[in-house]
Length: 438
Image 1 (cartoon, rainbow, N blue to C red):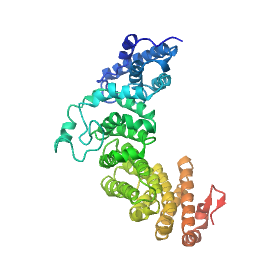
Image 2: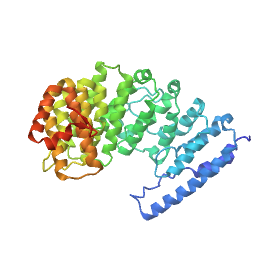
Image 3: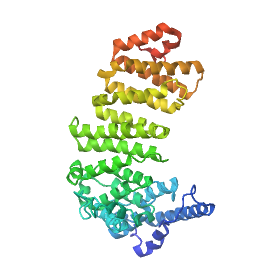
Image 4: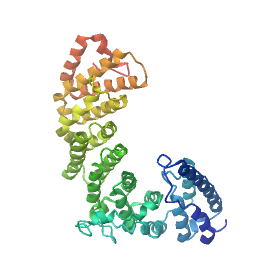
């Protein structure tokens, strides 16, 4: 087995993988921009293949850190999503990186030598630059946030986020202590940027970090509190085409953080989850973005995860949750909700009923009425397609959940429907069209 080609010989190849800072999104640029992007992508693909051949016969596991870090930095830019690479390039990049052992010295070299200089010109105002601990007050005074947004050199380095993501995905619990001061500043800079696309990139790093990071380290450095503050700010970015994606990512990451850093059943976990559900979703999004269908649907998508984490404590919000979930099912003229929103709402209803079973007797009539209305609409239309069949299944599941939560009272509601029109509602009492509920 040969030794790895020297760094001097590799540099021309690695330089060809440097992503130009002015590559434009084809949807937002001119035809010339689109043609230039496609030409660059073809050249990059050829370069990746050339690099793969050079490394194939090399003993990369015994090579020195300096050369491996240079290769890892160049190739890891293609590790994740980006308009500069195709799915084929991402697979190719991952194949190359699999031959590089991500040792702690290697990760440290990539983060300190390549990533840190890119973000160093824009220090985060709430972080100690040397330790990455949360500061008691904003560094630089009241105008620090504005200064922090000026001259953002890091935005001229496409692919840098993928490099960070590759590093984080190979960190173990014991590694974080050593690399904390190199990882946290760029992560928080991304998360606290004023543009949603960078917030989403920051959240992808946070989500990966929470898989292995020691909870004690998060709390000891104050980063758990800083993350909560940042994510709460994210939930105020409404009326944007990417808001729905942001809400989904924030909510799931928020729940993961709460589970990692707070004991189950504790007041701290209760407070964190109530802030997410009560303040951010019910008090903000459902109040100020109620007409943004995609945004509302995103909150319904993540609602089951939040409710399962909060448990019976969700009951304090039933006055807001139940009306929100049954609205897409009702037969109002102004209600033109999509089948997907109806299905998502029904699934969230099932979790709500299961977790808040002791309180559901107060809401059985509201839920059963909405289920019956949607059932009648589906029966009257006579349509038979995948959406209709899935809706019917979810309507039956909600009915079953309600019968299990409050058997006697729910059966009374169902009996009224059967007495009114047995032919119409008899199949509502079935599961998988065979197993009767009553």
